[in-house]
Amino acid sequence: MITMPATLRTARLHLRAPCAEDAPGVLAYVGDARAMRYMVWPMAETIEDVYNLLDDMAWGWHDGDDFAYAITATHEQALVGMISCQFSDDGAELGFILHPDHWGRGLAREAGAAVMAAACEIDDLYRIWACCDVDNTASMRVLEHLGMQREGVLRRRSKRPNLSAADEPRDDAVFAWVR
Ligand SMILES: CC(C)(COP(=O)(O)OP(=O)(O)OC[C@H]1O[C@@H](n2cnc3c(N)ncnc32)[C@H](O)[C@@H]1OP(=O)(O)O)[C@@H](O)C(=O)NCCC(=O)NCCS
Picture 1: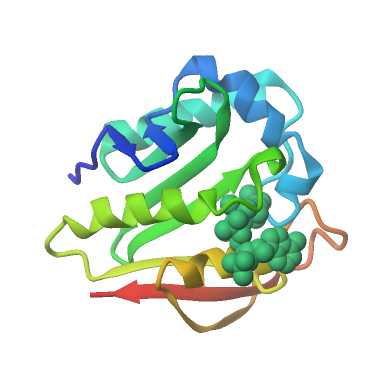
Picture 2 (picture 1 turned 180 degrees about the horizontal axis):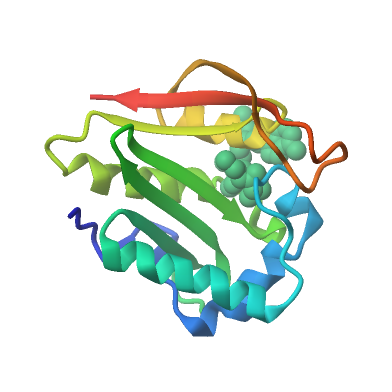
């Protein structure tokens, strides 16, 4: 079982395990078409959908294999977004989403750097990676800023239910940092 720090701090951000009180803040972005455009899960419609997501995240922490952090700005309660770090035989996979109100300020890379630094403390972790839709330029820029290299494209890998032609899998770009 892997352990990750329960909280992480950066210059502008506080990262911590999510809790039920985060549900309205989560709904604000998982119900937002701009934020959900390139995600692999459909937009949430109700607060119950969000409670189910938060339940899954709690199990990830409990099982020690999937660590989702709620991101808040230092000195503020409002939720900025989430970042997750999921461990498997393929290494640690990062995923992130911010509410559009907070885009364009370099916050995703700031949160990502903190999570990667924490994951790097795990001695036998050799690979931290992420994949995203080949058209998701903002996400790819974040991954490059995190020091990951683009390794290639997994063609027709992921359905993106919030795009048109939702039933047709699209190409994913794969990025990784390796020790
Ligand atoms: C991806 C995401 C987390 C980026 O967060 P962010 O904090 O706004 O990222 P940054 O401020 O570091 O900006 C990243 C880069 O993308 C660029 N960018 C932002 N929006 C863009 C857009 N729509 N098209 C092209 N480039 C864009 C920025 O200019 C910046 O480029 P630069 O580093 O060359 O200046 C945010 O856009 C988001 O939450 N998107 C929806 C969820 C998502 O797609 N997650 C990724 C799934 S793997």
